[in-house]
Image 1 (cartoon, one colour):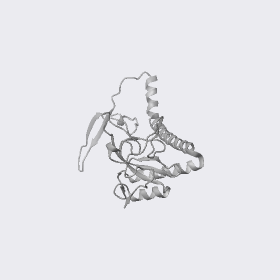
Image 2 (image 1 turned 90 degrees about the vertical axis):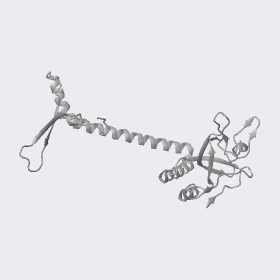
Image 3 (image 1 turned 180 degrees about the vertical axis):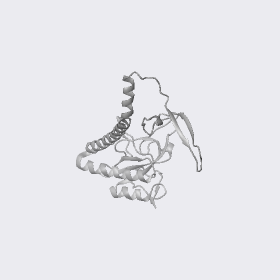
Image 4 (image 1 turned 90 degrees about the horizontal axis):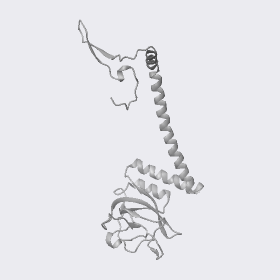
Length: 233
């Protein structure tokens, strides 16, 4: 099934890539989008572009120009939702991503919602959830309310990571406390020479009469110090 765009606010006859459900994007993701808002559509961006908050095929006044749909269409030959960025040699910069846009009937224009950065199902489910949260918070508290909610969620995530790191260091400190006490006692008693600790390994096998012993220098991990898992030997 192919999802064609409504012929509203778009240049007449402008060619564009039609989204095919299950091929370009998962059907479930597209159904979830429309369940959020039936004015949401996915539009393919062949090139990187700049856009205004609202765009249509209106270019604006001479003293108040605006980005508009279809600009540079003669060169690109495809639907573009704003001003095409170039590489400095007048060549369009490729992008190749699908974006979510919303048709705004009262304004007779299109509003950009978000870029779809991945086809991963978990990412797309999170994307739909974030959009649902934004719509819910915008209705109740406005756009600033949604931004504040996301900032608080990010801050809580950072604090959780820091708390987990602090707990780990506390556990390590407790595990090392007795050894550090011995180090302190030795230092206060003037015993500061390196002790060159060694690791002894007894080897044996079934029926062996005399067991053999191997002795080698102990590593930091074997010397009694407890270290985080990320410690590099």
